[in-house]
Image 1 (cartoon, chains in turn yellow, cyan):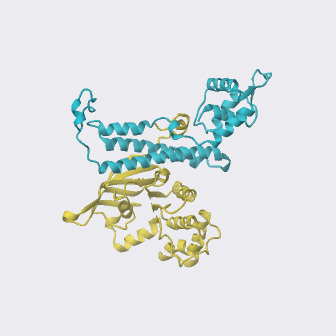
Image 2: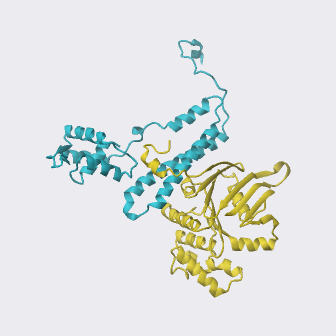
Image 3: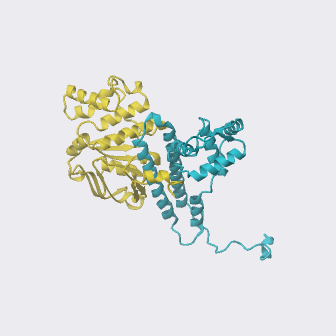
Length: 241
Length: 192
């Protein structure tokens, strides 16, 4: 089942001679249980694609659908509700509100959506437990390590009935072990039935995805998926080549 | 790295016969370096000749275990203490291929880069799958071997990204079909 459908999307910033074509006809489908990584040089359109997928920006041409709802056909109010209920975001920084505890941060999207405080808190604590943060509910972000904060952000990104998680360099400032733990968690969340899009410039991180899409100058130039030859690779001296 | 030092390191655990050495070697390298039994025996013969191992009496099953000698221990300690030189590794076929692609008329160099990057990325995905699947703390030596392959594949992707970025800014010089002639055949070169 497709959770995210991006159909022949173009995005032009500005107009006339100074127009910048950030995306030129990108088509991408992400199924439930699938993690897709987007790689490409700076300015290739990665973040534009992520913003369009999350309804934070509108395409100049083409269509984006989340869970069957075409974003361009939504009113602003409906779009805001869809973003709140269906889409989770994990960014490199500015992930958590520093004046709220971990549990309050995670519960926030539910409360914004009208869920009662108690119920939201109960769901939030369960979500924290799922990311191995039992007992961290009352802590403020600055009382937690970078890796723990990022886990809180992932718990928040996937709380409630949200099925699409969009991550932009989620391991940015973390060391390699902690970064790997974050990706492992993202992977397991997706394996549990969510759809994920991960923007990263690090191949080692992108390798956690089922598919890796390469963008260059706003165009998808290649897509790579594993060939299920892992065991064979290991017994072939020299590996890939 | 040589099979020689691999076997010496294994014999430091205690005496072993050829087949046991082969199994232990493959286990400790996570199956990344398959070894045939012939290689094991020829290496043992060389180690014995150099006084680094000594044969023990044959078992009832007709298998002859080998034991590391003091000289073998010293050699092994030296090996662990010496860094691996990059120049001992084989030349990088990929780098040579790209260098040639740049100077060969009619080759779509960005396509060569992209094809390789896709392939290396797939390899990286495969390694990562293995890692996701087998990550028990007990498997540390196996995980480290796997990480080595992961980091190498990652380095290759980064280098390919760098190649792609460099190609964007690159203006090829006019292609000359042949290298400049040798000075004897072209005396005007000396006027430079």
